Length: 488
Ligand SMILES: *Cc1c(COP(=O)(O)O)cnc(C)c1O
Image (tube, rainbow, N blue to C red; front, side, top):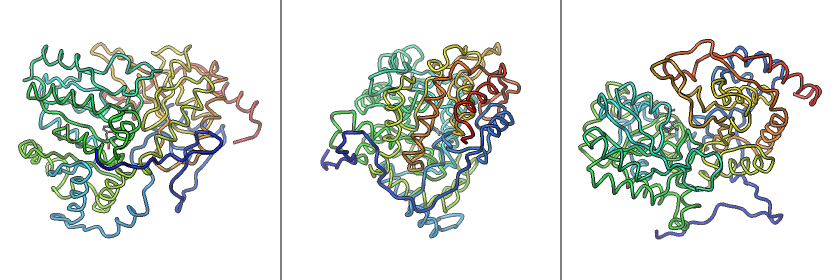
């Protein structure tokens, strides 16, 4: 790689590893920290499901990084010169230009968010009994593949789902497993190989370029297509820069281009990648583009807006360019790394190495007395909300599905995900998260399990309702009052 890019890390004379904000706050939004008595009512009203909480009752919203990242002044400014033509909008031209520069793909199809792009891909390529090898599924990816009759096969390396690891690239595909899946099923059954950047459900873990090159080789040998889910590509590129020797002097922009160059189709949720709304699918292969294109007006909207407001399209165009700015991209992973380091220091089980997207607390390690059938990650999310007002997300068996016999398919890992939206929180807020988690860890024996009271058939984690298996929430609240007095 030609240009040498400068480090965005600032050293402290004290030697402390403190992530420094390389931006200032210009517009603020007031937060609510309601007393624990109200939080207990609120989590009960929410059916012990943090998705069902109102932000009226939430202090720090660490549910997701989806659509919750801070926008830049430039993005907000760009929204004011949007062109709201139904067809031929210049806003779309600017978006397309940015995608061509950042992802290196000239054909672009808009989709209203990441899962809408997945719907288009599934409708275009997946048939009954299709086999989809991938590093790991994402919830909405799995739903679209299954609804279209396909089957997901996860081919991560064996240590990828170990909570504690030194493997810098837990998102890598195991090439031997990939070859085996192809040999056993035959190429005709495989519409594409999917690689997800910063593998979301296993803790925002990246893959390496070296691995993606290997995947590309296998794909070429077998005439298979490689699809890259680039929703979290900036963070994956950041980790490649800091963890893969070959790229230590490369810019994040160069790395993103190198990643996309190895894929035939790149799709993304702009809710994450650009701090805005929307999504898209891009490729340089005209044939593939033409297969997907007719589906856009059916499911999304005309080719130059695809269900996205033109104001958002302008913000996406600017946000896309900001993705290659390391001072923008480094903020979330460096805050996550800080929180992970602090929690580890106090013996709290967290996924390591620190990944992108959020800090992932190992609920089975945190609550070893709660059986997996009583949803330890869901219980931990509810308990942590109760004692802090911080809303995280369950990423465990509640986010999984049931088998044909109605039994839970137990998740590989039970995680409480504390998402770190880009440039939203301050370090003292992160310290508060650390403090309340440490308190909860000390009092972890008080936390019990959950059971379902109502459960929708698809994506049940969004609006399923649960209840506590005992009066543990009351006991936890009582202990909180003993220790914190009348503090919020
Ligand atoms: C969020 C996400 C999606 C889905 O995107 P939405 O915009 O929420 O529909 C797909 N893949 C990955 C890896 C994601 O993180």
